[in-house]
Amino acid sequence: MPRRPDTSPQTLLLFRALLADPSQWRYGYDLSRETALASGTLYPILIRLADREFLETRWEPPEQPGRPPRHVYRLTDAGADHARERLAAAAKPSASSKKAATAPTPRLLGGAR
Image (tube, rainbow, N blue to C red; front, top):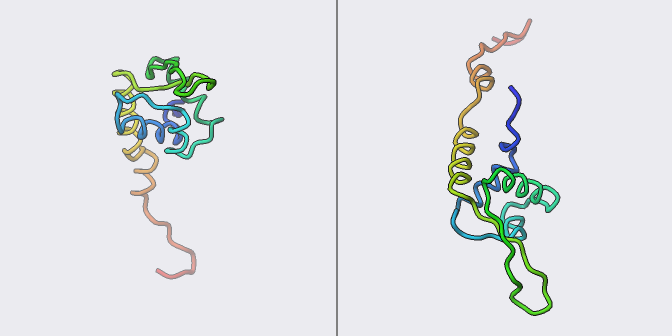
């Protein structure tokens, strides 16, 4: 079964960070620092989640004159539900790991028993 694109380990890290306070607006830079995700990994995930309407985005005016506006992000209600669902699914063992855990241990030829 192919993995859903929104369940990568990097996306799960981002979901955990965003779920800490789903209603809080977050800067990408802060999310990058919190998750240790590089900007080349983080921003494509943020864009994809925003395109799927799991994130709200907006431009925030600069705090200091001469600085550019900053993009901020937060989970939508649907995004928070989706994040919780994906994190719960990731925490459950997969069918293949269950099968491996219950498979009989092979005996070694001529080895110890």
